[in-house]
Length: 84
Image (tube, rainbow, N blue to C red; front, top):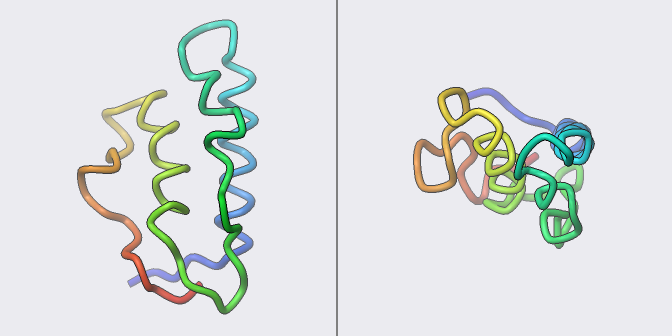
């Protein structure tokens, strides 16, 4: 299984949020750029990967292109409890 480091989660989340905000005038993904989709607990090096970390990246990407990104109820890319 591939290992996703905490910094990678943080970087990817930041890029997804920026893209959602960039698309604010061309669709309905702007809400994914708001604080409701910020992490309640940021990924930390040596910490636990939470379902929230995956979902708050996957949900906006799924809204942008559902054929390329599994949604929260579909295939799980990260399982709760994996160290990051």
